[in-house]
Length: 396
Image 1 (cartoon, helix red, strand yellow):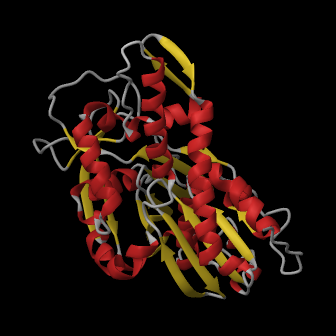
Image 2 (cartoon, rainbow, N blue to C red):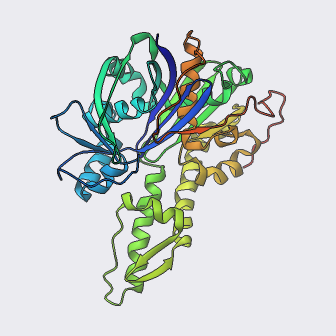
Image 3 (spheres, helix red, strand yellow):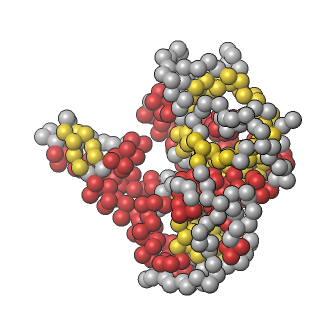
């Protein structure tokens, strides 16, 4: 007898975020969104489950996935993969998308389980490509995965038509906030009022405005005001900074794919010395943040007739102060609802899977084998649910 496992699979530009529920427990998993063919042959592994290899069957071509793929790829390969994902509305047609979907979904399954899966597309791709994406994912998936120094193991699962749901990425966060941990309606107010969902990612900033359950406007300004623009600005500033401290005046170019670590630490190592570049990081964030909020302010017509602004996405954290200053108490921050902002869409997708499925989980399921997913606790209810009686003030 098969056991349903509810999965929200959010394959983004920078990483694939997956949230599942099985046996009454929630699990989350992050895999760096990178897939490259194995061109080095046999390699020595350590016992790190993040080192993932994929093949369809023994003797077939091997692929590196996630962190291992980033480490084994060349700079040109990294750039090509990121560029295709950023600018192609049909990225899901690529083989890399299918491999990452299979690996990330397969690692969430356990025993004789049946996946009930929800996935998401960016706002500007959803209408045109949702049916095509369904056709690509529905059916049987059979492949082998190797993690760390463990041998290859076979994974098989079937995505049934009635068990696959495709929604837009911003809508996923709405379900994260509006549904409880069992997929039941918690905040009915969000389906009554006029709400704008702002999903800020690495390469895209999407806005969807809803009144009730009807989406009345979809807007996307991909690659104009997003985290990638912060990295582009920072890359220029770092080159100028290193030229200034370099006796040879040559400086150093920092590709944007190498900058997340610098943004987190605020430091660079240049010619044997550590330099604090926190002011450069803050300047880059401020420049993009102010431009972003100005465009959102104008597109939403100053938010005059909008009750709530929901801010979500992995890039929402650095831009939160600009939203708070402009929209005041109208702002709802997804991270305040029990899970990191980058997992909000994945969690909403998982809840959506539960809400749409009529299956009832069976309690005695074998625990998940050792992998890279992490169990996490979710509150039974939010202490202060969104209320239509809440006083709202907008700041200019």
